[in-house]
Length: 575
Ligand code: ADP
Ligand code: MG
Image 1 (tube, protein in one colour):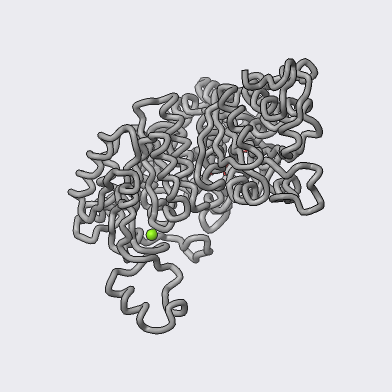
Image 2 (tube, helix red, strand yellow):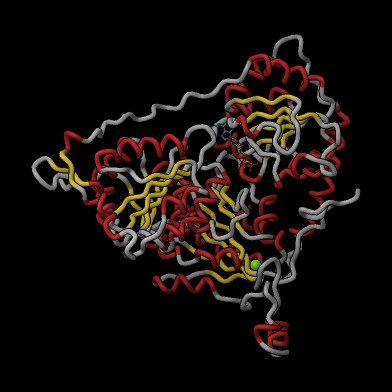
């Protein structure tokens, strides 16, 4: 066995590998080099899957996506100095999204520290801002203890990030195997935090008296696997619900009670809001006027007590896992004394708004004129992808408009730029999602819908997808720029009008870039589309391919935009 270097000796690499395995870690994403090559080999020898990627940031995104999908932290393994620093953006993204992640970096030998060691950097200190726990195990013997702690910190309470620093000297240190507490305890299946029954009663009382109730389903409900309970709650109470972007699919988007198409109205007019696993941050307009009624009453449920009353005071604030709270609430609400009667005028108002918005979207999406608009593209994509695919999406308009048209009817089937609004997450997320599908849902597909700018951040992960034979379908909605771009002729005129760095618009990218030709680097062919028919043909071909990724490059109208909004984004607006 590779872990036995001497008669009874085991080194730091193998202690680390065995400890992670004992804690149930399944997946590691990373990039190796000195001093973690042996570490990656030890992981594989211990029965852990290792996926080598092309940029540490993408590896970090992949590791956190697998954490969100499985509820168990993924590990990101990187080299010292620059390797770890490239991960920092990914660590912040996981921490801000409350996703479990463990980052492990090699670091320079301890006896080279302070004298200009190779890639020497203050790694623990650098990580601390982005972590719940950041530590360098003091000896090889104590690695299992800190691995257990890293897993526990990353996955319990509000999930987040743990960092373990592994100097080359520590990884190579040999210890008597029987002196290593390899069986250092593993945290058993987490017990759910139950709500105070009195608060459940109060919530039932308030909700049953509401005239215009609304349920908001956040990604905390998705992460907490509360789908069964939540579907039941919605179907029993018939209260309208609104998913947040990654809360989509906990209750199916195609449920008759979903009011996504009347989002602004629902938030603005609700008198009681049941907030389940979502923060009242920028995405939910802080729960404040002018986006909400000034006297709206909020029932807030969150696993994190510190989150309660944040940004807006809740009428009832419950520290609980979503699932046991919702189960308790259903039980209460089905008691005789409560008769939940959502007023028909509330539903009528919402339905009217839904109808109006749907009409706009339909008109746009039926407009097949070339160059295409976003709505026509997404309608065609939605109609031609396999049911219940995992949708990965990023970009500005691409993500925002796509969210309304690409439906999720299963929980944890949408991965996007998230709470931190991070661009560049797509390919990393898609690699993780496709690995997960391969192991747990072999017929499920991953559709990665990218703006052309967003794709540029991590596009080289296409090589990772080829290497691991991951059948991700990458759709690039290409408008030659950030937010919007320019067509070929306009760009030519603009760029010849003066100094190139002074006249090229900062939001512009090269026009009609043939991203699909990246497929040719691997001996395959991509798809270039300008029309609805071409998109249909390309998607059919891509769906039929199951042993490699595909790229569908859709050239759209560079000036295409989204539906005019009632409120300006992030700015206050007078009604
Ligand atoms: P969204 O992006 O959907 O609005 P956020 O990331 O803002 O969601 O909020 C998710 C919230 O869910 C966080 O405050 C987190 O503490 C909470 N949370 C995570 N897991 C659970 C769980 N199992 N039960 C209850 N709350 C949870
Ligand atoms: Mg673009």
